[in-house]
Length: 272
Image (cartoon, rainbow, N blue to C red; front, side, top):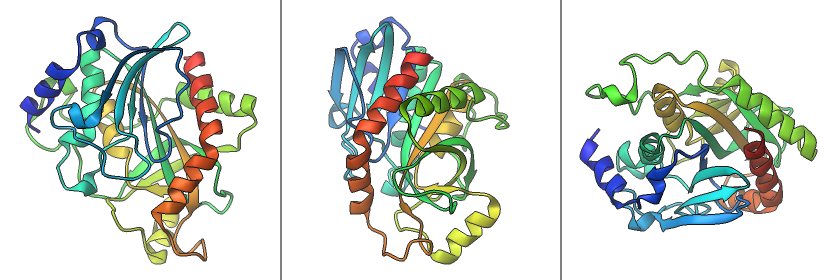
């Protein structure tokens, strides 16, 4: 990857972003962009103004960076993400994580919307990601080794920290939310999966499927960050649902679940 790409973005961010390492970074996926409960906003920047990142191109992604305080916690939140299917390479996809690394942030919460594969799931449920399956056959770490990003061959035995999964479950239980552990299958998109593909993913052990999160998780784990992952089941996957799939359904599910998402993120941040 092009290090100048990241350098220019870091130079644009104000000094306030680098004064004190955030207690946690948050990367908000489809529908999660407004799920923040903030006491004091310190920095707010539109993605389109950050060199190399650019505005989000997907409905349901707000597209702004916010550095804020919640109680005694300092939080760096990326509201919306760039995707590999947008065709601009890995740099915009992992840029938020690289900026967090440069800020000295060691904790990361990744969120997304997904299609439910496990028959126990229904739209509106939450899945605490315990592992993932990369079905894309590509990896953001491919290329010349960058020592600052960790070892050449990073261990992926525990990408998603058990402790963070425990805290997410504790938050969900306190709030009365339906949540279960699950495996997230990552596909490139932008088309939805076929029913046959969904059955294949189910046979491999996937509980939900989506088009994000795994690249950022792989990159962050290589950089020795502790990672939590949570997915909102926005719809049932192809062949499980009898309805045709559309992105509007994903956006609508996020709108309906917004109070629950805000409560879950806030309670989790309070616990770390």
